[in-house]
Length: 248
Ligand code: GLP
Image (tube, rainbow, N blue to C red; front, side, top):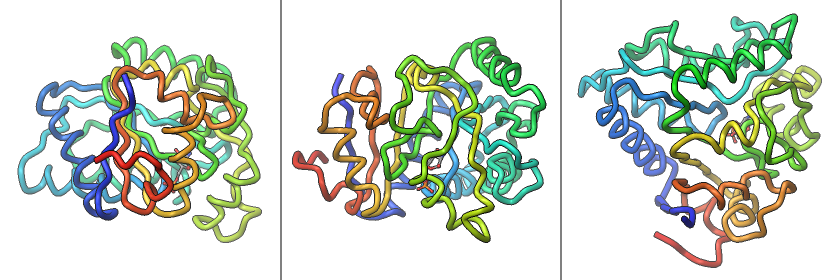
């Protein structure tokens, strides 16, 4: 199945479209297993989900979530840790049960065991129904940098120079950006029954075009999504600007 592409006019429309898709999936299956993403891109989508919860009663009480990744070495109280991000940008504003939310533990003293347990928890839950993704400017998904094997599972990874630079904007200085993370692997992500990737802004246009229209290669991790049976890209105009086929 080719990747379905929706080009929204701007960030706001992209966010609302993604939130509606997620909300419809929750209504359809209240005990859905959601795979969630961090970064600047999904913030608007999470805001809209919070609004739907508060104004329309969207119910998260049975939802279970697994996040893609976490920085190694950051405690959950660090404003740039992904656990903190999820709590602040979604979890504490909706009625999801905190014990149903899973973010890899970046402070684990046995990361290998943590990764294995994370994979087991996903399996025990029944697998991810809907996985939300962003994309790095180098085509990474979660923290699977270019060169990551397609058969990778949750593991400790090193961030590429590009990603360290890209993410430095969230920290006081580039030196504070952690160099490692725990990340779901590409195979873990590909096992989700449905995948939705969001991208916004010109900085993602190259990565989006290569992922959708280029060869399937480990050099562009998101290109693997061309092999997924149920994947949708929700883009804004800027991130879609380098596509040759203008799908709507
Ligand atoms: C981060 C995350 C990814 C995210 C990407 C894009 O490094 N590990 O999961 O998709 O980079 O982030 P942003 O949305 O801030 O551009």
